[in-house]
Length: 303
Image: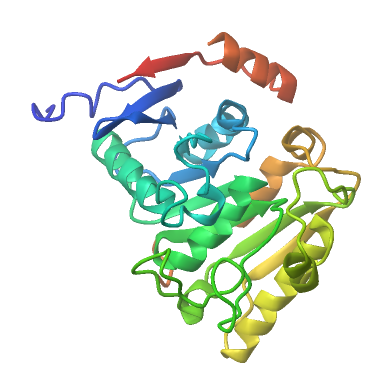
């Protein structure tokens, strides 16, 4: 029986990538993919784009994965105008709080699809990977597992340094308190290409370089080691892993086509479950670029 107060819940198309506007905020868009077997109590996969805003590309790449695993896919669209600080969750005075915005999007997705949005798997590439690992640190209870691919720089588990360099609270993130004993329990895998040593679109300051290294590869190694060391100090099993992929640079397409990205994600995500957790044409071009061979599903505008 269809709930008359929510007529779209059971009528949204499946096996289609839908471009939606948030009902409570018509300026906010997100992509939604509901697999054939998705629906009531389905698991959710969130994917966060980088500064190239390749949301469609990510949705196209992950549609087949979601079909196999039954994930409802949610890809928020963050714009330079409204979300200029999204990599750091949106500090006061620097754009919208995108972590809270993601919660609003997920609440809508839950009401529309019946999916379980209380806990979810999450992926991010580049700027999106910055968002993802910081989101885990702030909201560990929401994340089953995370894959962060090629972030430019990191928030370290250092209580002496203010956010976003460390986890000392700041006024620009009101209400945010970091609990290492919680976020260190979340399984996270860092993916980095061995050739990702260039400086293009990489934050370079004396402070960041001294703390983290001068290339994405160095920073990935140093952050992973710091997170594992912190877990050991707290008496926890280290849950952060580093996966260096040979002959890959800073390219989502290369991760997908040459780096076996989907296989790596499936391996990470298959190891967790909710019960085990302690806490159109444009689309066709993207899929062709990625080398996706399965039939193209059209992009549909749904409001």
